[in-house]
Image 1 (cartoon, rainbow, N blue to C red):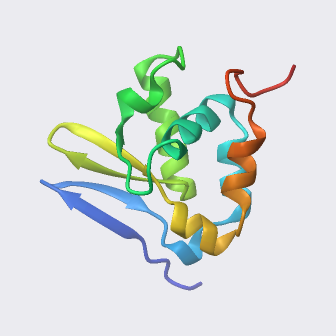
Image 2 (cartoon, one colour; image 1 turned 90 degrees about the vertical axis):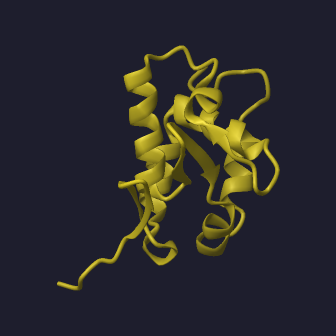
Image 3 (cartoon, one colour; image 1 turned 180 degrees about the horizontal axis):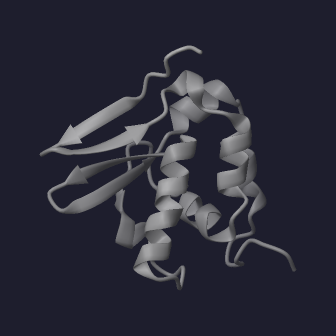
Length: 125
């Protein structure tokens, strides 16, 4: 079985694991984006400029979930390769992995984010 390498960013001893671009899987990305709360987080991050960063609390504002639940949602997005997280002081910052997702699955992010109607929580009617 081949050895899987992971990108790890270190900040004061705190390391977060991110899949390298070539290991981002379509099934994982789609599963992560299937949850309405995670899709909302991605829409918030997508609304920022190309280099936009948002703290977990800012990106999760308005979700109406507990802190532990929002932490879970961010972890799912990170492990799937949808977002990149790093620490800035005590805050965990998030950015959308636009270039990586576009390279792996051209047009997917734009299509998924664009399919969600503004002002309406995504999900079954």
